[in-house]
Length: 197
Image (cartoon, rainbow, N blue to C red; front, top):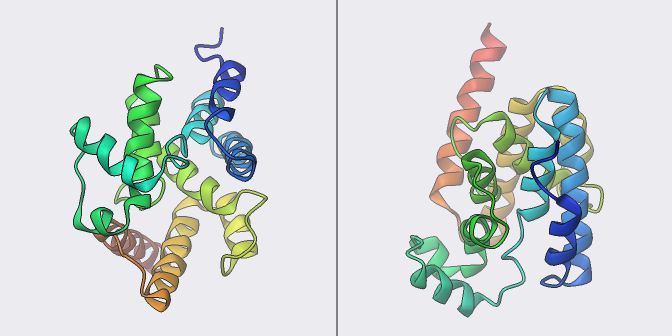
């Protein structure tokens, strides 16, 4: 017996998104389900996290800041400068309050899907990667390689994604979240140890 009515969630979510964002969201949900099947994660949890990962994305940036302040959500300096980064934290709040998701791991997977973090759980890695590799994505470097890796070795796929993301952000002189740097160092070390083993 299903604990989440995913179809009902989809109908509700669609009202708050533009067409392109909703198409991306469905892509993430289906990719997360496929990775869950491949790596032995609960498929429904992966679908719910994938579906709700961008639930706050279409909220205008000034409103994102306002809502975070209202609900006591911590705002880092990087997020203050680039409020679009807040959609992950705010999305976890919306998933809990508006979609009644109580599963802490689903909420955490939504919260860290843009920055990643050290020692991610299986579900967190799946959502982090699904957001990056879903079928409508086309611009990222090494996308074909990361898509292949995601179905073979999650840690290596996470490491490669973070490495490429940091390179891109440095080139673009974009706001860098400290957590991504810390997470990258963590996964870099994991890959180094694997190669030495």
